[in-house]
Image (tube, rainbow, N blue to C red):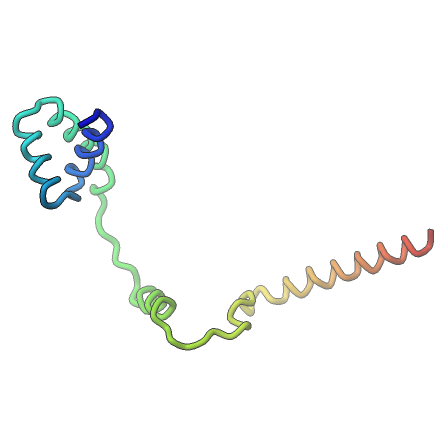
Length: 112
């Protein structure tokens, strides 16, 4: 096993991602190989900050929204892809300004 494979195995072992033969191999290495044990300790120290936070439970509406988007059997309308109602006014204003600018550009070019 190469150095990169040992490092990856140590990281996966530190995160408790291994199963079966890979887990057995990592446990044996950790029991008899000090360098491998040190690598596992390094990974556990690196990952410690990720797990030192309190779990956050999102509001139920978030879960319902995710499930609705993933498992919804209803066909979506083309209007669902338009911006929200609050921002439609801004989109209409931007489109109107662009139309006016294009018309002005065409008018200026026509005068040449």
